[in-house]
Length: 380
View 1 (cartoon, one colour):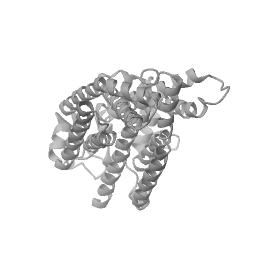
View 2: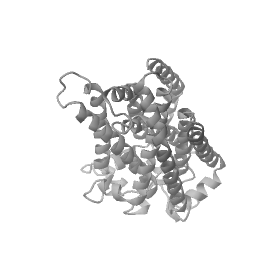
View 3: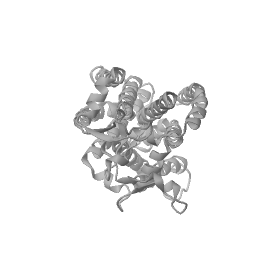
View 4: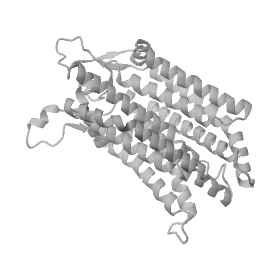
């Protein structure tokens, strides 16, 4: 049982790393929102989309990998969230599909829809995709409207274990203030990183288009970065003041899989304080972001990689804090005892063991991505 729970924690950590990497890589989406504001002429738009077009595939691949890892390691969460709140996820995926064929067809001669339409699709992906990803992640804390009946697997005629309890199928999640708050934070993080990336690349280039883009990025970055910091602080305060739910592992009814879910005020604050290393990751990320933004705003030195590393660490700390410490990482608003935890929502011990052996190849994947990143950057 100890080995099983260790693997559950290990795979939550893997999913958290992928989620944090995804938020960092969404600088591509943030960069797309600069079309029309920072990049105005056709030459400027072409340069901007060339810079971003060398990276968007990595973001899309990370999104798919994140979903795949969640499906393989915590299938009950995948089926509950993706299957229940499917309109929310369908809109997210559709926005990424629009991004994919916009990069492919925008510059084609005599394309069916015209450049303006594809540019609109890219901006839509930049705004809508980032905000809705934030909304979806926020449900880890705010919960979802689902019910659970695991005994249904014993009934031959039954074909579902969990189901959404309203007809909105996830659309209602968009209008929850807390969810929308994190959506805005993710959008501002992506836009800030997008500006830093484009600013850094263009500042090393020659030509009027690159010079104008770099100048506008430097000017607009102040407002976006300050907004990002303020909204992030507001989200952190709201998270730490939120009520959370835990598995009562000390209860006599706890069997290693299921147990009573208990309510706890300030649960996310208590959980981070009781796991010093998670608090260290979160605080380190926050401080690095502030240093990186301060370096750019005050000294005019682009700090994309430093700020991106800070965003990665801060998001990683938040995601780890949501799942570790016997937390119910996706609680049910219908019946809190139906809530999902690492104990009751993971794959079998055999599956997790097999996947863990496969995860040993991850360092090689990271090296390959780094190599591809360098090669793509060298052609810009």
